[in-house]
Image 1: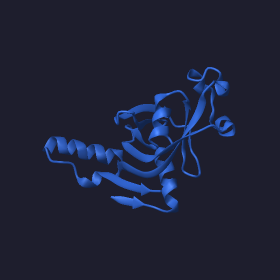
Image 2: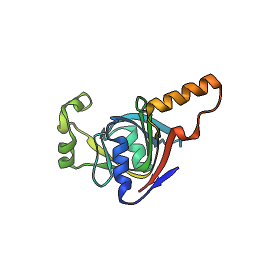
Image 3: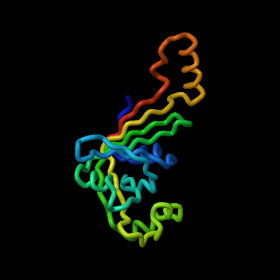
Length: 167
């Protein structure tokens, strides 16, 4: 497993998640259960924070305020890239940041746009990120999987690159 720290850590996380729109945000409910729901990533900024729009009166906001530790699970099935982000969540009411990140596509959830009562941002600050991606390209990975099916052997360990990024 590759471990990345230091200045290149945030750049590598951004590279991993930049073109995956939907993530599963996992929080902890009042009974201690893990609860996940899809969220659309608006941005990963230069400081490494990952931003989402949300409504103030949702369970995820309640849960994020009570238990700041959250998880984000990104999946690019086509590219065979998987990213797990463990971080801390914070609810933010910053009109300038909202204006920067808002797009008309959000009006499905926020009928009055940025004037929707209770609109807020959820900021996730990554602490540890793990990722899996093909080490030799998708075609080599698919060929290795096919070979394993035919020969009934386990796939080679070097087909997926597994890394850990500590912020």
